[in-house]
Image (spheres, rainbow over the protein chains, first blue to last red):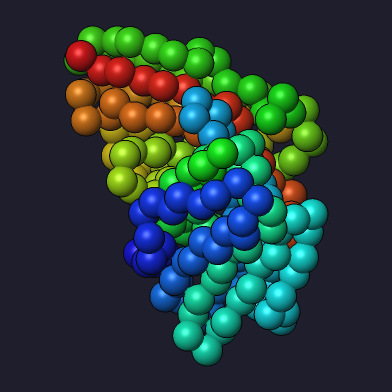
Length: 110
Length: 111
């Protein structure tokens, strides 16, 4: 199967700071990448996605960067807030099936 | 996401029992999926369906079966539950090229 991994299992940041969550993927054929946020007791919530023909995409307070050369994906959260505390995981795929990372737990310190 | 609902939200059952987890969606998507989530592991695909007449096994389908009763409904059954099927189960829908949208999950404990 595919391997989708995260560099760090936990991340703590001060409120107001920027957060960066990283993800490595292994399948060069993957052309679609997604970041999800999962709060305790809830299902994964879509945050942002990016296709392989792009290297950067911005949303509201979030930016996803894709480096296909080293098969690396990152999620940047600007001005991190307490409500951002959750597990974040990436997914890679080709549209029909997706492979999910194990997640990084983000804790925001007030 | 209220567009994808799962019932029950929590379930405790005993080894050997047959149970069914249900998923309904109002998003109008053709594609539906069942995943399980275990601590330390990413979501793993159990079964998926691209339309009412199309059912496909995922990477961990052994011990599970599914039924796609309508475009909006996709049920997952454990024919004879075993303790290592204790997990969080998520239903998802998609309408490519858009991402998958997940339900709130069912927490299953098999004693």
